[in-house]
Image 1: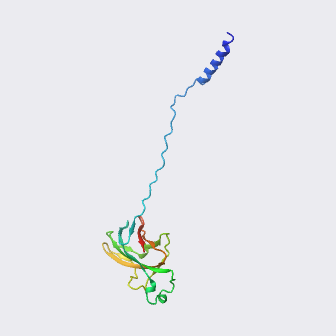
Image 2 (image 1 turned 180 degrees about the vertical axis):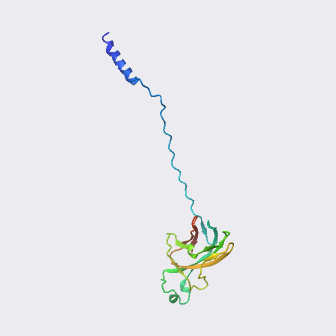
Image 3 (image 1 turned 60 degrees about the horizontal axis):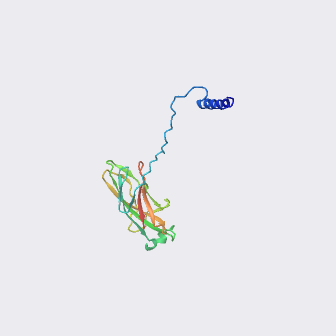
Length: 184
């Protein structure tokens, strides 16, 4: 019997350890954490790009049409070096014409500064040539435009000869920027 006592004692100790010792049992269910969902970030809708000849309806009540865009070689203008003194040999003219129609239902003001020319890198520091380019309008659209009425105008920019792609942009106060792709 002496040999059985250490085995009984050992089994009794194992039994007590398995039971948790004090006798209190936690009957509360254990909370299982809910799987986390990744935050859904809406993908911004890219601003639409139009091409020369297309009309775009803006969020602030304008219908703008880029009627034309063309390169004008300044060397074809008589005495161009005297007329356009600051121009360099690596520059040319880009003439754009546009039509702006007020579709808002009320009179609104439009300024030529609402339209901006950029190259594909975002540079927008192109000089507007306000006079001296034959057969091209020297004034852009601007001023008050009554509901349902439209104005036509144009702007001539001095641009690098090497640049062949531009964007004409319109930035409304409360909506997406409108882009026209110009390839010359």
